[in-house]
Amino acid sequence: MDDKTKAASGWRFSLKEGDQKSLSEVFATVPVPAKGFKGSWLRHLIAFSGPGYMVSVGYMDPGNWATDIAGGSKFGYTLLAVIMISNLMAILLQALSARLGIATGRDLAQACRDAFPKPVGILLWIACELAIIACDLAEVIGTAIALKLLFGIPLIGGALITAADAFLLLMLMNKGFRFLEAFIIALLIVIAGCFVVQIALAAPPIAAVLGGFIPSSEIVTNPEMLYIAIGIIGATVMPHNLYLHSSIVQTRQFEQNEAGRRYAIRWATTDSTIALMLALFVNAAILIVAASVFNAGGKTDVAEIQDAYELLSPLLGVGIASILFAVALLASGLNSTVTATLAGQIVMEGFLRIRLPHWARRLVTRAIAIVPVVVVTALYGERGTGQLLVFSQVILSMQLPFAVIPLVLFVSDRSKMGVFTISKPIAWLAWLVTGIIVILNLKLLFDTVFG
Image (cartoon, rainbow, N blue to C red; front, side, top):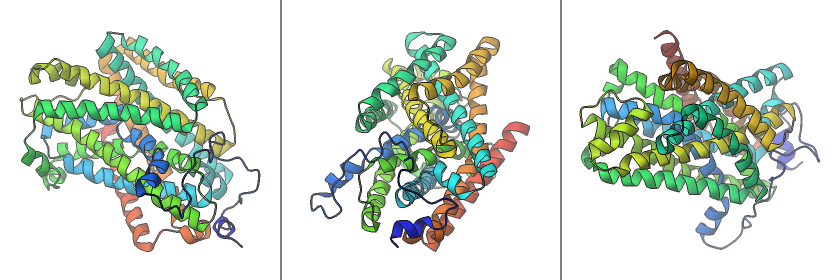
Protein backbone atom coordinates (compact mmCIF):
# COMPACT_ATOMS: atom_id res chain seq x y z
CA MET A 1 0.00 0.00 0.00
CA ASP A 2 1.60 3.31 -1.10
CA ASP A 3 1.43 6.55 0.87
CA LYS A 4 -1.36 7.90 -1.34
CA THR A 5 -3.60 4.97 -0.45
CA LYS A 6 -2.75 5.26 3.22
CA ALA A 7 -3.53 8.97 3.23
CA ALA A 8 -6.87 8.29 1.57
CA SER A 9 -8.05 5.65 4.07
CA GLY A 10 -9.66 8.18 6.43
CA TRP A 11 -11.95 9.66 3.79
CA ARG A 12 -15.56 8.61 3.22
CA PHE A 13 -14.75 8.43 -0.50
CA SER A 14 -11.32 7.53 -1.84
CA LEU A 15 -9.74 9.00 -4.95
CA LYS A 16 -10.14 6.83 -8.01
CA GLU A 17 -8.56 6.88 -11.45
CA GLY A 18 -10.53 9.20 -13.69
CA ASP A 19 -11.90 11.31 -10.81
CA GLN A 20 -12.34 14.97 -11.65
CA LYS A 21 -9.20 16.91 -10.76
CA SER A 22 -9.36 20.31 -9.12
CA LEU A 23 -9.26 22.91 -11.94
CA SER A 24 -8.83 19.99 -14.33
CA GLU A 25 -8.09 22.21 -17.34
CA VAL A 26 -4.85 23.43 -15.72
CA PHE A 27 -4.10 20.49 -13.37
CA ALA A 28 -0.37 19.59 -13.44
CA THR A 29 0.26 21.84 -16.45
CA VAL A 30 3.19 23.82 -15.00
CA PRO A 31 6.52 21.91 -15.18
CA VAL A 32 8.88 22.03 -12.20
CA PRO A 33 12.42 20.66 -11.77
CA ALA A 34 12.66 17.07 -10.56
CA LYS A 35 13.23 16.67 -6.84
CA GLY A 36 16.88 15.69 -7.31
CA PHE A 37 17.63 18.58 -9.67
CA LYS A 38 20.99 20.12 -8.68
CA GLY A 39 20.32 23.59 -10.06
CA SER A 40 20.13 26.73 -7.96
CA TRP A 41 17.42 27.23 -5.35
CA LEU A 42 16.21 30.15 -7.45
CA ARG A 43 15.24 27.75 -10.25
CA HIS A 44 13.06 25.77 -7.82
CA LEU A 45 11.55 28.93 -6.32
CA ILE A 46 10.65 30.42 -9.73
CA ALA A 47 9.03 27.15 -10.84
CA PHE A 48 6.75 27.11 -7.78
CA SER A 49 6.19 30.89 -7.59
CA GLY A 50 2.70 31.99 -8.59
CA PRO A 51 0.02 30.37 -6.42
CA GLY A 52 1.23 32.25 -3.34
CA TYR A 53 0.97 35.59 -5.13
CA MET A 54 -2.53 34.76 -6.37
CA VAL A 55 -3.51 33.99 -2.78
CA SER A 56 -1.85 37.17 -1.47
CA VAL A 57 -4.29 39.21 -3.58
CA GLY A 58 -7.05 38.42 -1.09
CA TYR A 59 -4.99 39.90 1.72
CA MET A 60 -4.77 43.33 0.10
CA ASP A 61 -8.17 43.61 -1.60
CA PRO A 62 -10.38 46.73 -1.27
CA GLY A 63 -12.00 45.24 1.85
CA ASN A 64 -8.69 45.71 3.70
CA TRP A 65 -8.18 49.31 2.71
CA ALA A 66 -10.90 50.89 4.86
CA THR A 67 -9.70 49.25 8.10
CA ASP A 68 -6.05 50.11 7.40
CA ILE A 69 -6.92 53.74 6.57
CA ALA A 70 -9.12 54.08 9.67
CA GLY A 71 -6.47 52.52 11.92
CA GLY A 72 -3.66 54.74 10.63
CA SER A 73 -5.60 58.00 10.63
CA LYS A 74 -7.00 57.55 14.14
CA PHE A 75 -4.19 55.80 16.03
CA GLY A 76 -1.03 56.48 14.06
CA TYR A 77 1.38 53.56 13.78
CA THR A 78 0.16 51.59 16.81
CA LEU A 79 -1.87 49.03 14.84
CA LEU A 80 1.05 47.97 12.63
CA ALA A 81 1.60 45.21 15.21
CA VAL A 82 -1.91 43.90 14.50
CA ILE A 83 -1.24 43.82 10.75
CA MET A 84 1.97 41.88 11.37
CA ILE A 85 0.32 39.34 13.72
CA SER A 86 -2.66 38.78 11.42
CA ASN A 87 -0.26 38.26 8.51
CA LEU A 88 1.67 35.63 10.47
CA MET A 89 -1.62 33.85 11.14
CA ALA A 90 -2.38 33.95 7.42
CA ILE A 91 1.04 32.51 6.55
CA LEU A 92 0.35 29.50 8.79
CA LEU A 93 -3.16 28.85 7.45
CA GLN A 94 -2.12 29.17 3.82
CA ALA A 95 0.77 26.77 4.39
CA LEU A 96 -1.71 24.25 5.81
CA SER A 97 -3.98 24.78 2.81
CA ALA A 98 -1.13 24.08 0.37
CA ARG A 99 -0.17 20.98 2.37
CA LEU A 100 -3.72 19.62 2.17
CA GLY A 101 -3.91 20.05 -1.61
CA ILE A 102 -0.50 18.55 -2.36
CA ALA A 103 -0.64 15.67 0.13
CA THR A 104 -4.17 14.44 -0.58
CA GLY A 105 -4.79 15.50 -4.19
CA ARG A 106 -7.94 17.23 -2.98
CA ASP A 107 -8.72 20.91 -2.68
CA LEU A 108 -10.51 22.00 0.50
CA ALA A 109 -13.94 21.83 -1.15
CA GLN A 110 -13.35 18.27 -2.38
CA ALA A 111 -11.98 17.32 1.05
CA CYS A 112 -15.14 18.61 2.76
CA ARG A 113 -17.28 16.69 0.27
CA ASP A 114 -15.33 13.47 0.86
CA ALA A 115 -15.13 13.82 4.65
CA PHE A 116 -18.55 15.04 5.80
CA PRO A 117 -22.12 13.78 5.31
CA LYS A 118 -23.90 15.33 2.33
CA PRO A 119 -26.11 17.75 4.38
CA VAL A 120 -22.99 19.15 6.08
CA GLY A 121 -21.28 19.51 2.71
CA ILE A 122 -24.27 21.43 1.32
CA LEU A 123 -24.25 23.75 4.35
CA LEU A 124 -20.52 24.41 3.91
CA TRP A 125 -21.04 25.06 0.19
CA ILE A 126 -23.80 27.61 0.84
CA ALA A 127 -21.67 29.37 3.45
CA CYS A 128 -18.71 29.51 1.07
CA GLU A 129 -20.80 30.81 -1.83
CA LEU A 130 -22.06 33.62 0.43
CA ALA A 131 -18.48 34.47 1.32
CA ILE A 132 -17.42 34.60 -2.33
CA ILE A 133 -20.38 36.85 -3.19
CA ALA A 134 -19.50 39.10 -0.24
CA CYS A 135 -15.88 39.22 -1.37
CA ASP A 136 -17.03 40.01 -4.91
CA LEU A 137 -19.18 42.78 -3.49
CA ALA A 138 -16.13 44.44 -1.93
CA GLU A 139 -14.24 44.12 -5.21
CA VAL A 140 -17.08 45.67 -7.24
CA ILE A 141 -17.23 48.61 -4.82
CA GLY A 142 -13.45 49.07 -4.77
CA THR A 143 -13.12 48.89 -8.56
CA ALA A 144 -16.10 51.22 -9.09
CA ILE A 145 -14.65 53.75 -6.63
CA ALA A 146 -11.27 53.60 -8.41
CA LEU A 147 -12.90 54.15 -11.83
CA LYS A 148 -14.79 57.14 -10.44
CA LEU A 149 -11.69 58.66 -8.86
CA LEU A 150 -9.54 58.18 -11.97
CA PHE A 151 -11.99 58.78 -14.82
CA GLY A 152 -15.04 60.40 -13.24
CA ILE A 153 -17.28 57.43 -14.09
CA PRO A 154 -20.35 57.35 -11.77
CA LEU A 155 -20.35 54.50 -9.27
CA ILE A 156 -23.31 52.78 -10.94
CA GLY A 157 -21.55 52.88 -14.31
CA GLY A 158 -18.30 51.62 -12.77
CA ALA A 159 -20.11 48.74 -11.12
CA LEU A 160 -21.65 47.73 -14.45
CA ILE A 161 -18.27 47.94 -16.21
CA THR A 162 -16.82 45.39 -13.78
CA ALA A 163 -18.98 42.71 -15.43
CA ALA A 164 -16.52 42.77 -18.34
CA ASP A 165 -13.85 41.07 -16.24
CA ALA A 166 -15.54 37.73 -17.00
CA PHE A 167 -14.01 37.96 -20.45
CA LEU A 168 -10.64 39.10 -19.06
CA LEU A 169 -10.38 35.92 -17.00
CA LEU A 170 -11.45 33.77 -19.95
CA MET A 171 -8.73 35.31 -22.11
CA LEU A 172 -6.06 34.81 -19.45
CA MET A 173 -7.00 31.19 -18.74
CA ASN A 174 -6.95 30.38 -22.46
CA LYS A 175 -3.32 31.52 -22.60
CA GLY A 176 -2.29 29.15 -19.80
CA PHE A 177 -2.05 29.26 -16.03
CA ARG A 178 1.46 30.72 -16.05
CA PHE A 179 0.15 33.67 -18.08
CA LEU A 180 -2.59 34.23 -15.50
CA GLU A 181 -0.02 34.15 -12.69
CA ALA A 182 2.15 36.66 -14.56
CA PHE A 183 -0.83 39.02 -14.94
CA ILE A 184 -1.55 38.82 -11.20
CA ILE A 185 2.09 39.41 -10.26
CA ALA A 186 2.34 42.38 -12.66
CA LEU A 187 -0.62 44.08 -10.97
CA LEU A 188 0.86 43.32 -7.53
CA ILE A 189 4.07 45.06 -8.64
CA VAL A 190 1.97 48.08 -9.69
CA ILE A 191 0.28 48.16 -6.25
CA ALA A 192 3.55 47.82 -4.36
CA GLY A 193 5.25 50.41 -6.59
CA CYS A 194 2.49 52.96 -5.99
CA PHE A 195 2.87 52.63 -2.22
CA VAL A 196 6.67 52.76 -2.35
CA VAL A 197 6.34 56.18 -4.00
CA GLN A 198 3.65 57.30 -1.53
CA ILE A 199 5.74 56.29 1.48
CA ALA A 200 8.71 58.14 0.01
CA LEU A 201 6.52 61.24 -0.44
CA ALA A 202 5.08 60.93 3.08
CA ALA A 203 8.55 60.40 4.62
CA PRO A 204 7.30 58.81 7.88
CA PRO A 205 9.65 58.80 10.91
CA ILE A 206 11.47 55.47 10.82
CA ALA A 207 11.62 55.09 14.61
CA ALA A 208 7.84 55.56 14.94
CA VAL A 209 7.16 53.05 12.16
CA LEU A 210 9.42 50.40 13.71
CA GLY A 211 7.87 51.07 17.11
CA GLY A 212 4.43 50.41 15.66
CA PHE A 213 5.37 46.78 15.00
CA ILE A 214 5.88 46.22 18.74
CA PRO A 215 2.54 45.13 20.32
CA SER A 216 1.09 47.62 22.79
CA SER A 217 -1.28 46.87 25.69
CA GLU A 218 -3.32 49.86 24.57
CA ILE A 219 -4.62 47.81 21.65
CA VAL A 220 -6.54 45.68 24.13
CA THR A 221 -7.39 48.28 26.76
CA ASN A 222 -8.70 50.94 24.35
CA PRO A 223 -12.14 49.71 23.14
CA GLU A 224 -12.13 51.85 20.00
CA MET A 225 -8.64 50.71 19.06
CA LEU A 226 -9.57 47.08 19.77
CA TYR A 227 -12.57 47.37 17.47
CA ILE A 228 -10.43 48.55 14.54
CA ALA A 229 -7.80 45.92 15.37
CA ILE A 230 -10.44 43.19 15.17
CA GLY A 231 -11.57 44.67 11.87
CA ILE A 232 -8.02 44.45 10.51
CA ILE A 233 -7.75 40.78 11.51
CA GLY A 234 -11.23 40.05 10.21
CA ALA A 235 -10.42 41.61 6.84
CA THR A 236 -7.05 39.87 6.55
CA VAL A 237 -7.80 36.12 6.56
CA MET A 238 -10.10 35.44 3.62
CA PRO A 239 -12.02 32.13 3.69
CA HIS A 240 -12.10 31.70 -0.10
CA ASN A 241 -8.28 31.89 -0.16
CA LEU A 242 -8.04 28.59 1.71
CA TYR A 243 -10.12 26.87 -0.99
CA LEU A 244 -8.19 28.63 -3.75
CA HIS A 245 -4.70 27.79 -2.48
CA SER A 246 -5.41 24.10 -1.91
CA SER A 247 -6.37 23.85 -5.59
CA ILE A 248 -3.90 26.00 -7.51
CA VAL A 249 -0.84 24.38 -5.88
CA GLN A 250 -1.88 21.29 -7.86
CA THR A 251 -1.10 23.05 -11.14
CA ARG A 252 2.56 21.99 -10.65
CA GLN A 253 3.86 18.74 -12.20
CA PHE A 254 5.52 17.35 -9.06
CA GLU A 255 6.11 13.62 -8.69
CA GLN A 256 3.12 11.78 -7.21
CA ASN A 257 5.03 10.00 -4.43
CA GLU A 258 6.09 10.84 -0.89
CA ALA A 259 9.40 12.46 -1.85
CA GLY A 260 7.79 14.47 -4.65
CA ARG A 261 5.02 15.72 -2.39
CA ARG A 262 7.42 16.72 0.39
CA TYR A 263 9.45 18.65 -2.18
CA ALA A 264 6.31 20.37 -3.50
CA ILE A 265 5.04 21.24 -0.01
CA ARG A 266 8.38 22.81 0.92
CA TRP A 267 8.55 25.08 -2.13
CA ALA A 268 4.82 25.87 -2.19
CA THR A 269 5.11 27.01 1.44
CA THR A 270 8.15 29.12 0.57
CA ASP A 271 6.23 30.69 -2.30
CA SER A 272 3.19 31.62 -0.19
CA THR A 273 5.31 32.90 2.70
CA ILE A 274 7.28 35.28 0.46
CA ALA A 275 4.09 36.42 -1.30
CA LEU A 276 2.29 37.10 1.97
CA MET A 277 5.21 39.21 3.13
CA LEU A 278 4.41 41.40 0.11
CA ALA A 279 0.82 41.58 1.36
CA LEU A 280 2.18 42.59 4.77
CA PHE A 281 4.11 45.42 3.11
CA VAL A 282 1.07 46.70 1.19
CA ASN A 283 -1.28 46.63 4.20
CA ALA A 284 1.38 48.20 6.41
CA ALA A 285 2.04 50.82 3.71
CA ILE A 286 -1.63 51.83 3.59
CA LEU A 287 -1.65 52.30 7.37
CA ILE A 288 1.73 54.09 7.38
CA VAL A 289 0.60 56.54 4.70
CA ALA A 290 -2.64 57.17 6.62
CA ALA A 291 -0.72 57.68 9.87
CA SER A 292 2.00 59.94 8.46
CA VAL A 293 -0.36 62.05 6.33
CA PHE A 294 -3.77 62.08 8.06
CA ASN A 295 -2.96 61.43 11.72
CA ALA A 296 0.07 63.70 11.67
CA GLY A 297 -2.01 66.36 9.90
CA GLY A 298 -4.77 66.26 12.51
CA LYS A 299 -7.24 64.38 10.28
CA THR A 300 -8.02 61.54 12.68
CA ASP A 301 -11.47 60.65 11.37
CA VAL A 302 -10.59 59.51 7.83
CA ALA A 303 -12.18 56.10 7.26
CA GLU A 304 -13.59 56.21 3.72
CA ILE A 305 -11.49 55.42 0.65
CA GLN A 306 -12.88 58.47 -1.17
CA ASP A 307 -11.90 60.77 1.71
CA ALA A 308 -8.35 59.40 1.71
CA TYR A 309 -8.06 60.06 -2.03
CA GLU A 310 -9.30 63.65 -1.72
CA LEU A 311 -6.99 64.50 1.20
CA LEU A 312 -3.74 62.82 0.12
CA SER A 313 -2.54 65.32 -2.49
CA PRO A 314 -3.52 68.50 -0.56
CA LEU A 315 -1.82 67.30 2.63
CA LEU A 316 1.30 66.02 0.85
CA GLY A 317 1.40 68.93 -1.57
CA VAL A 318 2.02 66.55 -4.50
CA GLY A 319 -0.73 66.04 -7.10
CA ILE A 320 0.38 62.54 -8.12
CA ALA A 321 -0.16 61.11 -4.61
CA SER A 322 -3.93 60.74 -4.98
CA ILE A 323 -3.57 59.37 -8.53
CA LEU A 324 -1.16 56.67 -7.36
CA PHE A 325 -3.59 55.78 -4.57
CA ALA A 326 -6.45 55.33 -7.07
CA VAL A 327 -4.27 53.35 -9.52
CA ALA A 328 -3.29 50.96 -6.73
CA LEU A 329 -6.96 50.59 -5.75
CA LEU A 330 -7.94 49.78 -9.35
CA ALA A 331 -5.15 47.20 -9.66
CA SER A 332 -6.26 45.68 -6.35
CA GLY A 333 -9.87 45.42 -7.51
CA LEU A 334 -8.95 43.86 -10.87
CA ASN A 335 -6.64 41.33 -9.23
CA SER A 336 -9.22 40.34 -6.65
CA THR A 337 -11.93 39.70 -9.23
CA VAL A 338 -9.74 37.19 -11.07
CA THR A 339 -8.84 35.16 -7.98
CA ALA A 340 -12.41 35.25 -6.62
CA THR A 341 -13.61 33.80 -9.93
CA LEU A 342 -11.25 30.86 -9.63
CA ALA A 343 -12.28 30.33 -6.01
CA GLY A 344 -15.93 30.26 -7.08
CA GLN A 345 -15.20 27.66 -9.75
CA ILE A 346 -13.21 25.52 -7.30
CA VAL A 347 -15.97 25.65 -4.68
CA MET A 348 -18.77 24.77 -7.10
CA GLU A 349 -16.84 21.93 -8.73
CA GLY A 350 -15.47 20.62 -5.43
CA PHE A 351 -18.69 20.52 -3.43
CA LEU A 352 -21.23 19.79 -6.17
CA ARG A 353 -19.16 18.41 -9.08
CA ILE A 354 -20.90 20.98 -11.28
CA ARG A 355 -18.84 22.65 -14.02
CA LEU A 356 -19.81 25.94 -15.63
CA PRO A 357 -17.90 27.86 -18.30
CA HIS A 358 -15.66 30.50 -16.71
CA TRP A 359 -17.57 33.37 -18.29
CA ALA A 360 -20.93 32.00 -17.09
CA ARG A 361 -19.68 31.47 -13.53
CA ARG A 362 -18.19 34.96 -13.48
CA LEU A 363 -21.25 36.68 -14.87
CA VAL A 364 -23.57 34.93 -12.42
CA THR A 365 -21.45 35.80 -9.38
CA ARG A 366 -20.73 39.31 -10.62
CA ALA A 367 -24.41 39.98 -11.34
CA ILE A 368 -25.30 39.01 -7.77
CA ALA A 369 -22.65 41.47 -6.51
CA ILE A 370 -23.50 44.29 -8.94
CA VAL A 371 -27.23 44.45 -8.14
CA PRO A 372 -26.83 45.49 -4.45
CA VAL A 373 -24.18 48.07 -5.38
CA VAL A 374 -26.41 49.65 -8.04
CA VAL A 375 -29.50 49.65 -5.79
CA VAL A 376 -27.72 51.03 -2.70
CA THR A 377 -25.90 53.70 -4.73
CA ALA A 378 -29.15 54.79 -6.38
CA LEU A 379 -30.99 54.99 -3.04
CA TYR A 380 -28.34 56.21 -0.60
CA GLY A 381 -25.50 57.59 -2.71
CA GLU A 382 -21.77 56.99 -2.25
CA ARG A 383 -21.90 56.82 1.56
CA GLY A 384 -24.26 53.86 1.24
CA THR A 385 -21.60 51.90 -0.63
CA GLY A 386 -19.26 52.44 2.32
CA GLN A 387 -21.77 50.76 4.61
CA LEU A 388 -22.22 47.99 2.05
CA LEU A 389 -18.45 47.43 2.09
CA VAL A 390 -18.57 46.99 5.88
CA PHE A 391 -21.51 44.59 5.53
CA SER A 392 -19.54 42.45 3.04
CA GLN A 393 -16.73 42.10 5.61
CA VAL A 394 -19.26 40.96 8.23
CA ILE A 395 -20.50 38.23 5.87
CA LEU A 396 -16.90 37.11 5.35
CA SER A 397 -16.39 37.01 9.12
CA MET A 398 -19.44 34.78 9.54
CA GLN A 399 -18.13 32.28 6.98
CA LEU A 400 -14.53 32.08 8.16
CA PRO A 401 -15.02 29.32 10.80
CA PHE A 402 -16.63 27.11 8.12
CA ALA A 403 -13.34 27.13 6.19
CA VAL A 404 -10.67 27.30 8.90
CA ILE A 405 -12.01 24.59 11.23
CA PRO A 406 -12.34 21.86 8.53
CA LEU A 407 -8.86 22.74 7.22
CA VAL A 408 -7.18 22.31 10.61
CA LEU A 409 -9.23 19.17 11.29
CA PHE A 410 -8.04 17.57 8.06
CA VAL A 411 -4.31 18.40 8.26
CA SER A 412 -4.08 17.21 11.88
CA ASP A 413 -5.86 13.89 11.14
CA ARG A 414 -3.37 11.08 10.44
CA SER A 415 -6.05 8.85 8.91
CA LYS A 416 -6.51 11.47 6.17
CA MET A 417 -3.02 12.92 5.77
CA GLY A 418 -0.85 9.87 6.50
CA VAL A 419 2.84 10.81 6.69
CA PHE A 420 1.99 14.43 5.88
CA THR A 421 0.04 15.01 9.12
CA ILE A 422 1.24 18.16 10.86
CA SER A 423 3.15 17.77 14.14
CA LYS A 424 1.42 18.23 17.48
CA PRO A 425 3.08 21.61 18.22
CA ILE A 426 1.98 22.92 14.81
CA ALA A 427 -1.51 21.49 15.39
CA TRP A 428 -1.74 23.26 18.78
CA LEU A 429 -0.58 26.50 17.17
CA ALA A 430 -3.08 26.08 14.32
CA TRP A 431 -5.97 25.51 16.76
CA LEU A 432 -4.84 28.53 18.82
CA VAL A 433 -4.81 30.72 15.69
CA THR A 434 -8.18 29.28 14.67
CA GLY A 435 -9.65 30.05 18.09
CA ILE A 436 -8.32 33.62 18.07
CA ILE A 437 -9.60 34.31 14.56
CA VAL A 438 -13.03 32.80 15.21
CA ILE A 439 -13.51 34.62 18.54
CA LEU A 440 -12.37 37.97 17.14
CA ASN A 441 -14.53 37.61 14.05
CA LEU A 442 -17.55 36.73 16.16
CA LYS A 443 -16.88 39.82 18.29
CA LEU A 444 -16.58 41.94 15.15
CA LEU A 445 -19.88 40.52 13.92
CA PHE A 446 -21.59 41.21 17.28
CA ASP A 447 -20.22 44.75 17.53
CA THR A 448 -21.17 45.56 13.95
CA VAL A 449 -24.73 44.27 14.31
CA PHE A 450 -25.47 45.50 17.84
CA GLY A 451 -22.79 48.16 18.43
